[in-house]
Image (tube, rainbow, N blue to C red; front, top):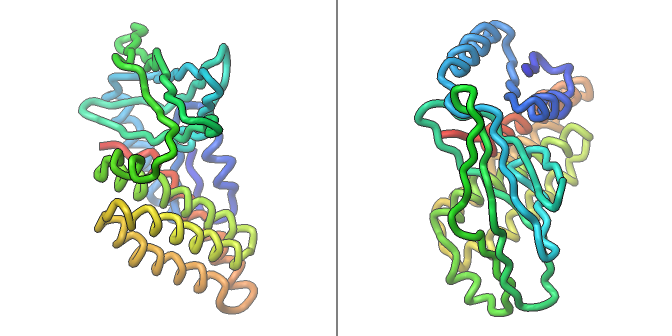
Length: 252
């Protein structure tokens, strides 16, 4: 799906693309439309894994509540989502959010996580060799010491900050400057507390620089004549939502 200009529903376009295991584009200039179609045609010729589906068995009260923004289906005690096609020499990192019981110390093991896909019109399945382990523990220092700094940095910048952009985009679109600023402040407080223990320079830069730019964009959106503000609300909401969408689905 391709959204051109300002008068379209970006969330509807994203949903249609996700349900069809496709991709969504936002264009501010219609002249770029032909380039998008050309790139999609070239990508289709390079596809090595199509109809991809990730299946995660859920046990002991564990639930998958977010899969990099993709729609999640639940059937037969499994969470399933469809992250789209993979092309030659591509790799992807997807950050998943689970909800699990925290009323007692316990280890949770998710066995049999699978990736199903098609290659050369043949169905294939890849299994995660080891169970995916999640531990609920009381000692915060033990939690911090178990954090992989590099992966946590990637999660904050690709997943958490992108979620913030999506939330701020929705607040701007709804005309709520205060809600957008509250979301930014909450993100800053939460990530600052965690980063005080992890000590990531990249996350520090995100908090110092990216949030400053985001706050300025929110303030600028609601400054000016009412007609200008309405136009900026549409444009900035769509741009931020698209940045969030692109970041959470980035490929290498």
